[in-house]
Amino acid sequence: MNVGSEYLGNGKCRFTVWAPLRSQVAVHIVSPNEQIIPMQKDERGYWQATVDAAPGTLYFYQLDGETDRPDPASQHQPKDVHGPSEVVDHSSFPWSDTQWSGVPLEEMIIYELHVGTFTPDGTFEAIIPRLADLKELGVNAIELMPIAQFPGNRNWGYDGAYPYAALHGYGGPDGLKVLVDACHAAGISVILDVVYNHMGPEGNYLREYGPYFTEKYRTVWGAALNYDDSYSDEVRNFFLENAIYWLDRYHIDGLRLDAIHAIYDLGAEHFLEEMATAVDERLSQNTYKRYLIAESELNDTKIIRPKETGGFGIDAQWCDDFHHCVHTLLTGEKISYYSDFGTIKDLEKSMRQGYVYDGTYSVHRHRRHGNSPADRPGKQFVVCIQNHDQVGNRLDAERLSMLTSYDGLKVAAATLFLSPFVPMLFMGEEYGEDAPFQYFVSHTDPDLIEAVRKGRKEEFKSFDWHKEAPDPEGMEVFEQSTLNWEKCREGKHGVLRSLYQRLIQLRQDVKALANLDKHRLEVTSLDTANLLTLHRTSDHDQIFSLLNFDHDAVTFTPHVPQGNWQKILDSSDSEWLGSGSELPAQLQSGQTLTIKPLSFVVYTA
Image (cartoon, rainbow, N blue to C red):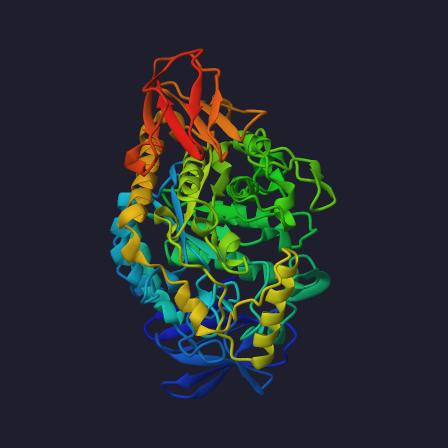
């Protein structure tokens, strides 16, 4: 069942809303000409009416003849979360991407960005002039943090109250379509971060419409969304239709599903499995595949296994263990969940298979965690060395550039792009942006603002951070988080960007790096130093790489695979602002090598 307003053409619009426990529902047109039109209810609790309403019409739903509320499936909220909804004509947009065929998941170089802080203007269309820079870098997919309507104009997006409404402050529906169309013209896929585990607190009127929530389960945000309790069929429909809506109406190439471990469903067919089936079946007429990528802390391969083998059929997932391995090796942090990581053996294991915790005991959790991902292909794991969570959920919101040395940044970048997984950058990472990425909101309810402040303080206690937290409501934290793009080609920032560009180019040119078959990989580590050796092969070529996370030079005799090895990249070279390499241009078996502290080298044969 489609929900919301659907413009039919010729000045007609069909309105559909689910409100099973209401005795009356009407469409209250408030502009251009005020009128109230009663709706008819069907046996499933859907109310419907087809009325004279052109695009741009503003309306509420009137509940039981008393209360006006915005449409839960509003497609545009031009007057913020408490104002009327607007009728949108999706058929009128002049798409130019009819020849677009998408970027295969295994070829993606993903770039996560926050629309509001990516540019000073903070809009969808302001991103377009920078697409050429991203394309030159080698990025072929951008991932937008959530853009569903939230209160005010400053928010990460996870407080969205209208999951169908592209944020008015970012440019609304047409602004998003213009961006997607421009991305496709540039050869760049668009992944949208969507939130199906909770709703934002301000402007969220779902409870007034029906049993969208259940008290059977509790999340960190309160009662869980109702995916398996009474009336859950229509709640599931609401969010399933939302996924199709973004992929179909906006030509989005993939969805990143936020924190799916907080989607509670004990029914016979899990909501995520139903979603994967719906996306595949209902978009099958398209010439290219749309992707679903889950964020999950469960380390459970059931999420990404095919439906035929009992899995949910989700295409890929974020792999946080990889990030934690790299982060702890470079920073030495051992607090909160980082206490489970910190050795080169951890990184060796993650590089080999994805998860570190695959049924092994977790000190942080005080129990065993995860199951084995050994048989899952590398393309099913999206890995990063920074993302919005890992930066913004720190007390001072420091990026990795503020936590390790310049040499450490280079090693981290190499680890990301030499891995057999799908790499993701966080905006500004490629040039070592040193501005923080703070947590920010712009709520209007004073009690809610205070609750957010208190919640942030409680969250930081687990990290043993006791300093006063920045005020998330303050304009200053938002302004501090805007990228300083003028730095991206200056001095050391420009050199780091060139290194990222070189690593991405290698990944695209060297078949052994483009091949994400984990069975074509050998990875080992030293017992005496934080050094990793990586051997990846294809039918056409092979690479051999050394990654030194130690703060001291390491001298050792590696086991060199057979081949005529030529050095193609060395982070100690002066070109990359290194102190000068001592590694040979050609690599021979039995050679004793000395690799500089916090450096890497790549040989190919």
